[in-house]
Image 1: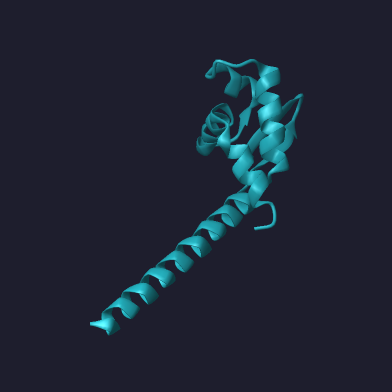
Image 2 (image 1 turned 45 degrees about the horizontal axis):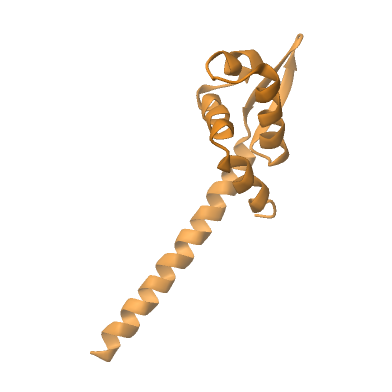
Length: 104
């Protein structure tokens, strides 16, 4: 995952994670997100920009509003990253267990 650092940096901020989590149930406007969080609309817009730059969120215009949603491609890349990480960790654990077992 080429932009893993940007993705992880984007998700380290608790408010940004809350913004991201609000999008789990579907597309939302900045105002809809800001109404349920203790931050201003401009702050939500800034958080969404960071999430968009990290490839986690997309936007589309609907009239005068912009609707934001989770980018399935960005989420798939993040999942692939963790799948690879987990597979490598399990392979290393298996190798260590087999090595330990052959010593006995």
